[in-house]
Image 1: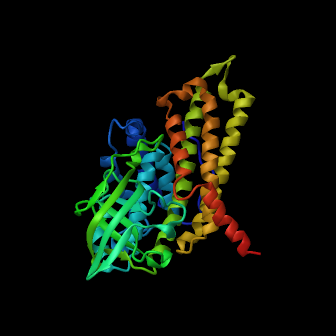
Image 2: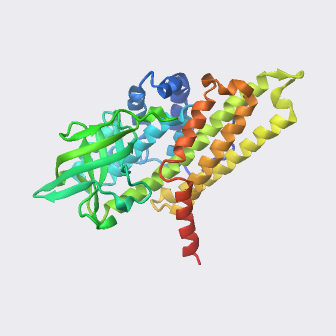
Image 3: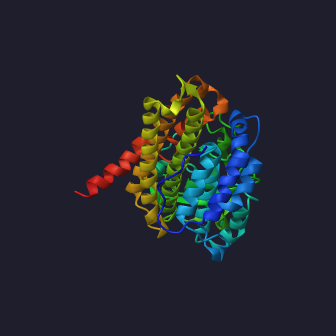
Length: 384
């Protein structure tokens, strides 16, 4: 039994693609998500299979992509996260790298890297955060020291989603110490480069399917051909990528909450207490009704935030609203949905503990709620 989503995005959505994502989620994510989260199986092969369906959605057809709408991408994220949000986060990070590569002014690099990112031959990772630098991206210290014909790269990165299996590392680094955003550039590293190493996957409370690691660079030799975004443009590209990621997180949280409603409604409709189905008791029926209201409100806000993306002009404050609200609503909503199952909700087989933990992880991705409030409060001050 599935909860029927009521709020729908404006504009064109490729429903065939959304259905393919739904079928993939029902066929693979429902079956394997628990094993991935426990670390007893690897999602890498499944990730490479789904990439050609989703990662090229926003890439123009002239570059070999699908050339479709942001709304289509968000609907695919919803359907996939409905069954496993951790896996969908891994896919979303790869997709963000794919989108960023398609926008690189370095045509030779783009044409060399982009096909593999769209086909699944390559998996991408997005490296901005450092062990001592998170919220303030202008303070990164990973050093790309200019040399004749290129750079020598040294430093560390933290919280690298897909770090366990990535082939391509989109890395933001500082070319001039103390210059802040002006000195940041973005380079593309390959797994086989001498001096690049990753840690064992971090043992997280949820979303182990993201294969999150730390990374270290020791005097890696780079040429100018490895630069995706030069100084003066890279920081803006990073901020655009974060806006894309925040919108994706909102959609994934909405999908995870819809999946929790699926489980809760099905269980509550099939279990009898005091001669009636659990869902027919007013207390439980009203509880799930409130969860559904929160979900539809969050989806409406997310799709509203998506509209400016269609023209390539995201509104940062609106995206921050969507990300903050979706994370909070999904965590609270899944917690309430678990009440319909009673103690059975605590069993891993119900999928709800895994999804609840996964949503909690997304709260820390691409800026916490407090970071979103910074963005929103700046917009409020600008309107004075």
